Amino acid sequence: MKRFLLFSTLFLLTLAGNAQTPTEKIQNPMLWADVPDPDVIRVGDTFYLVTTTMHLMPGAPIMASKDLKNWQTVSYVFDRLTDSPKYDMQEGTVYGRGQWATSLKYHNGRFYALLAPNEGGPMGQTYIFSAEKAEGPWELVSRMRHFHDCSLFFDDDGRVYVIYGTGEMMELKSDLSDAIEGSHRQIFKREADERGLLEGSRMIKHNGKYYLLMISHVYAPGRHRREVCYRADRIEGPYEKHVILESDFGGFPYVGQGTIVDTAEGDWYGIIFQDRGGVGRVLTLSPVRWIDGWPMIGDEEGHVPAFVRPYKSGQPAADIVCSDDFDQQRLGLHWQWNHNPVDQAWSLAERPGFLRLKTCRVVENLYLAPNTLTQRMEGPTCSGVVKLDISHMKDGDRAGLSAFNGDSGVLTIKKDGKKTVLEMSEQRVKLTDREKAVENVDEQMKESVELPRGTNSISLRLDGDFRVGKDVATFFYSLDGQQWQPIGSKAYKMIFDYRRFFMGSKFAIFNYATKKLGGYVDVDSFAFEKSEK
Image (tube, rainbow, N blue to C red; front, side, top):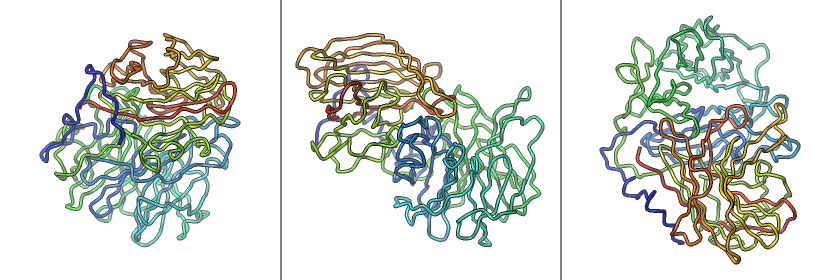
């Protein structure tokens, strides 16, 4: 096993600092990373969570936990989407589109996942996948019309429904092949001050009643984003409504959108996301108290608590963001590619112990580069270090590490002729509204350093700070893995880019050609550390 890079003592975060004790409480946010639009179910003693990752592939990650604290990715519902060349960054892109708000269910011994890409036409059709185990393999069951932010629901009588949009419902055929024509119902109407959509449908059944959880965007004075619940004795209604959570938390905005889940002992928890700027949308965990038949989320004052008592003690530590020395035969499930990967242009076998990224398409900028490899960033502070062998880069090649988003902070190794330079730049992409085609990339170079001739290896480091009022990234490089030199912006401001990417900033490792093909870089390792909450 290769030894991971040593961090600067200024940012060294020991593994001991992340160690757990059996009595340690769950601290909110439960997952301080970009994990939006959650759906959570329990099967036996294991909780399963699905989240939105849009244009990243493979897509629709399934995460598992025994204790609601330690989560790890166990599979993806699909490897890639192929309805359009846009998924391959040809004839446009799918930035901010792709897979959205997947619904996860377990029925008669099988897992089901229903998702509808945020697209128009055939690209926006709803997919239903199924698997015997959450770890996969997942198989496509059917495709049908678009259902926005939908919830799949299997009723006790064997009938199956999809609840979507703002209170709309259709029944599905028993084999899930399509919706039943004529079954459409509007099961409730929104209130006058709810001028935005009610989204994020999550339907459950408890003690014979139907509960539909949704996020409500309210624009009346003194009102905030909130989680509401519609309750009925029959699935067709009539439904009555109650606000079950209206809470800000930790100096950030009001939480909203998620679901509730029970334990084997009959306790209930709410898992609701919160927008937290540059890191994305994080997950909060709250107790649920059933009061007058309503699932009230939060503490006794109706707020997201700072700490939640542990559900189960003694579970091994796990995380959805991980270091990697690339010694395995398969790429770890903690990684996702930006759009569909070009499989012929990356390898873990050509140089064992390294990830080889080969140029495969001449492009003008990072936003069109194939095979950019990403992981989430995590709060409150974190650091990622990538060690690269750059000895086989060709003239015009560009490789490096980025805080990747619609606005990105980028460390780029540029090979131009016999000269190799390292640049820190701030890049902003402009996309067309419909095709999400890259119209322009505004690149502002902040600092450039010429590397010594014969430099074959370099380490790049990106530190992220997502505490209240921060959202900043700082950049460093090292030629020996020991001494670190700062480069570029002292505090690059990261954003939550809701108009283009609609996700938090990601660690992104890239290599692409601007002149000719044939070059490659070998990624030796990626070392990740995060601070205590």
